[in-house]
Length: 154
Image (cartoon, rainbow, N blue to C red; front, side, top):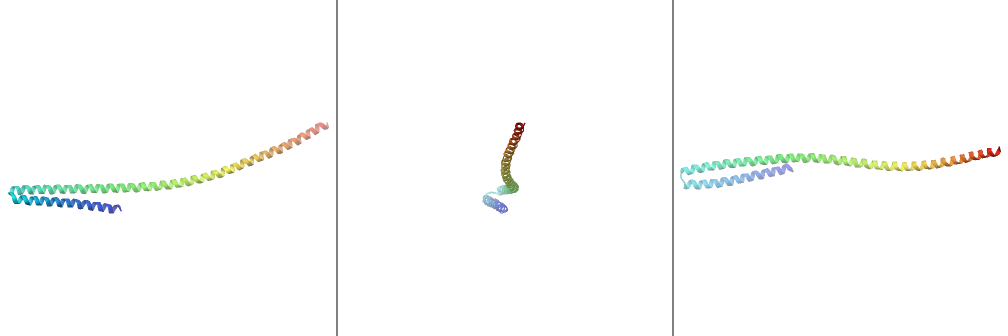
């Protein structure tokens, strides 16, 4: 698509320059013809020189316009390359972001599972401590009774 646009731009610029050059040549030729018929040979020579200078000037302007078009096309190519590079970089960053988001989501899920397991372990630990406390209390009460019984039997 860009090369089509380039071709169109170059074609239009070339056509415009050619049209202007043809138009100016036509005007100059018409003026020269008119002057040659009404003036002497010296005037004819001066007009011929002026026409040659104008032709040289137009040729120079045409060359400058072609250089400008070439510069613009080179700049466009540079910008296209830069856009392509940036697009590639953006795609890479998007993939990285997607991967990071997925990893973060997995870590959050794992964290939730671990928190649930931790809560379960805390609850189980609390229950086991209570059970051990009750068992210890029973044993101590039993020991106390035995000691009191021994004391009372003496």
